[in-house]
Image (cartoon, rainbow, N blue to C red; front, side, top):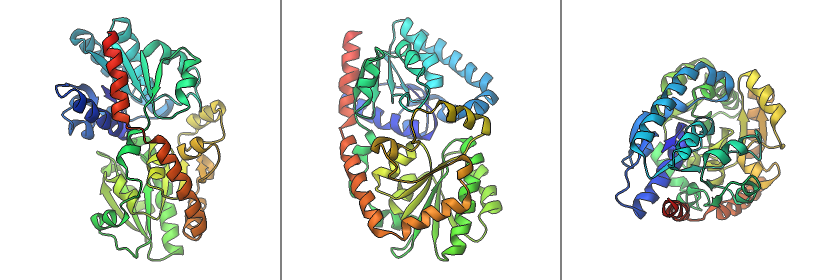
Length: 373
């Protein structure tokens, strides 16, 4: 298995847990993070090595990434696992899956690349790389079939593990927050580039909100290894805001909060499953932004909006992601109870549609692939 960054580590760990329940003797190794290690995964490299975003960031780490992929390919070709599962990280995994598949090793890609949003040419690469794709969203298998890619909708494992009724009181107790506190969760992302570009503006928005609404509490979950990057930014940008840093524990932060300022990505779906009002944002190197903007196929970037096919939560991207705009949209959620209730109803419907017993469905699909082998 190969999983990149925190979101891939989480998805892979949930999948691995289900595979071990089905096949207790399963041995898994490759590239993974702490959640996978907790499932007995043998990490030859840590998943944080793949935590890059955009072409500018990838170029900085190109030689190291290529070296890791070449070394991993040689080892897998020598050891010949029963199946290789690439968890997201398509730019890394496609180049690994294709030669493994050519050599007769069955390859599964877990999480359909967002070819419905941008970079449609990935469909051709996926067809060459994967014997089968495990899809998180119901519309994806039919779309992939048009490109000759076999796929199964397995739902989202987080929809199975996150309760329909978020444990707000328990999460607040664990984080030392009072029931009466108004809490804002700040989730700038788990990549180093996201901390560089997004964390400062979220912290500035928090400082502005604290001045406008004294007494607000802020919680900022920090991905493994990134605290040394975040702490100096806190001192520089968040003067006057009561911001609590926590290592990991993003789910507790989302369960505890009243609203979240959150980077576009898997975390927005997690916030949706916790039924939390959110303001989605993203900032990146301007060259990456120009490239992505030209190649986008639809109006939405955040997963709750994409799945709903409309803006059910606001998105503030790149130049629009200013501290004042973020603060304004977050405070608007806090001031509008009927709007929050309407959103919660829609997000509950979304949660139910994705709750599919992912581990069992994924195991069924992988079992068929192994039988073919």
